[in-house]
Length: 112
Image (tube, rainbow, N blue to C red; front, side, top):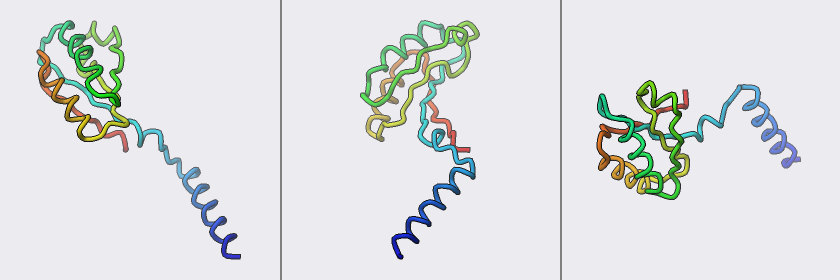
């Protein structure tokens, strides 16, 4: 009898999450956005991406969209950091901090 109550409660919890529209995919997406000095040339954006693409095993460089380079879009250099720990994140940030033109990084909050 007790097992049936636990199973029923678990089923209600799963159904409740599904009906509430809980989007768990956005909870696992984390990325680091690189910001450059105003007027930083395209070559510095590309160089920073390539220089730090393999700084840590769990950070994945996202390809630069060509239209972003044409418009000199802010935040065109990004790294997926879904599975990085604090040490790996520090290594990546240190690598990026040594690149010409890089002014800083940000990790946007996608949980809203």
